[in-house]
Amino acid sequence: MYVKGLQQKIIDEMFVKPSIDPAAETREIIDFMKKYARDHTFIKSFVLGISGGQDSTLLGKLVQMAVDELNKEDSASYEFHGLRLPYGEQKDAIDADDAVAFIKPTHRETIDIRPSVDASVNALNEAGYTISEFVKGNEKARERMKVQYAVAASSSGIVLGTDHPAEDITGFYTKFGDGAADLAPLYGLNKRQGKEMLKYLGAPARLYEKTPTADLESDQPLLSDEEALGVTYNAIDDFLEGREISEEDYETIIKWYIRTQHKRDHPYHRNFLPDYE
Image (cartoon, rainbow, N blue to C red):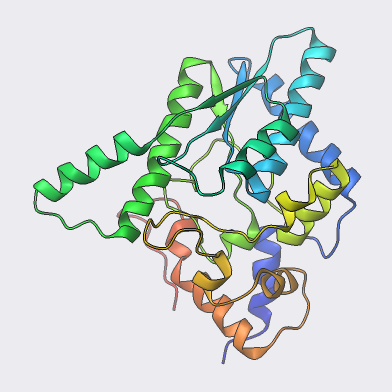
């Protein structure tokens, strides 16, 4: 039996509020990105992959709003590169197209990662390493991040990440893939709070009402996050807001949190090895 005090520790660690004011959160996140850009004068652009899911749609809209304000206030020429990064044909491509239309990024490009991923997997197979669909899914996530950093390097930019506590608590991301970024402006929001913000910003309802999916495994296209995790985002959000949840959901969330702690830690070295017991 886990001590319920661990719930509060995790809430504090992930900076989740029991409720939000969407307008105030929008202003705070935009101002955060603007300040970071002004404090780091090398920055001329922001880069983000747009999947058509809730998180990248929300962050994409916020960063374009920040870019528009920076350019107006500073008479500058900041840019936002909103990238479509499908592996071949994306099953929910219409959602990604709708998200890009809602965001209206300065630059919108589609870069197919399939040739690069397939070449990497084939090389590994030829070297005698068996690459499962699960591992290949991680290859896709890391290739997408590699592309984003290449675009950032070529445009004096930084890469934005959509990491937030409802995914961070379960480690539901690829280490050094979608878990890698220079800034994580959505951190502190859970899933339902992100949905509140998209409603406030006037996003098409189906972009925040759709079933969340990582869509990484080709043999399980559009497998829902909740099915993969064995717990709903409603339960995770309730946990993060300090509400009481079922014992089964509590145990599942804590199990994922402990199991994936290595993803939230910096690389270990010989002078630092954490003790989780």
